[in-house]
Length: 380
Image 1 (tube, rainbow, N blue to C red):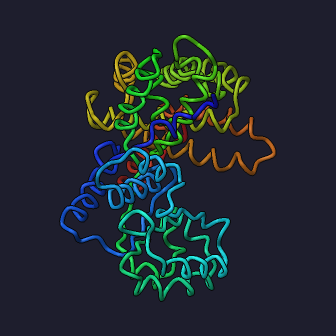
Image 2 (image 1 turned 180 degrees about the horizontal axis):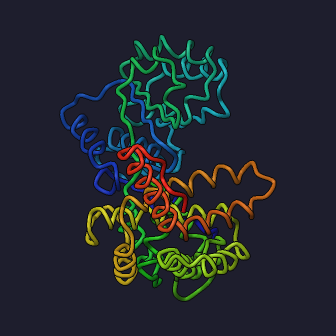
């Protein structure tokens, strides 16, 4: 039997199962309950946040109020005769739009409504949008449109003005983490808490991306999913080595920093290492500013404890400087013919941040005294 990926198997099938977009789910459910369903909706948001899933759930609630499994299965697999899914990227021309208009006059075969779900609607041509405009303005009473897009600014204002718009936000890492834990348990697997947290963060607000990454980890065939497996699979910088490097930065030890940096770049790219720096410096900055128990840092267990202790070795202002410096070098590396030289210079600069700050303060102090006395400052 063919394997079905996690992102499809664990897709939400009801408003109550929706993760991260609960307010939108409540609003759409209330619209149905109060018989105030609009004729057209626009769902916008980045990839993997639940737009198409919500469109199918909405269609199922409208056309399958009794919850019949065969009808639900047809809707969620895109095979229902009354719920027509159209890919705007591959059906973007005016001829396809005219087909939609022509078929919309016929009443649904089984449900109450004929529902058109147009994914990536921003890919339609200007002529196709113009063809749809009149139908969307005054559609037959049995027709509903649900438009989904990752780029709402490309949808003409004339179309948007005829839709109720819902903006799907990136799903918080904490909610992705909870869902991943439930999936791992359902699959009969074991996973380290640090691994689940890392996968949730790498999802960048997309449940689909996080589940796809979890799928890759499961395919490795390990009995237990660990952070080491994730780092090996994706070629991510070793978290412990980065921790040792940051400790050496706190010690002001450029020799150790360069040595640890060499270990990292020999296993991965300088860009990935700097991306890891930015993430770690950000967590340390937030902990330094808000305290070790802050909810703004998504770390758990021993990992949070270690980072909290490390954050005590820095001040928030210094970490802000390190973030800005790292981000600046990261951009410069992309166009440099000597990326390793820039990377090593960054490491030394980070290790000498405190010393450089002391020299700057010393020079500034001498300049201030010179101005006050009217005499030039002595050279060091």
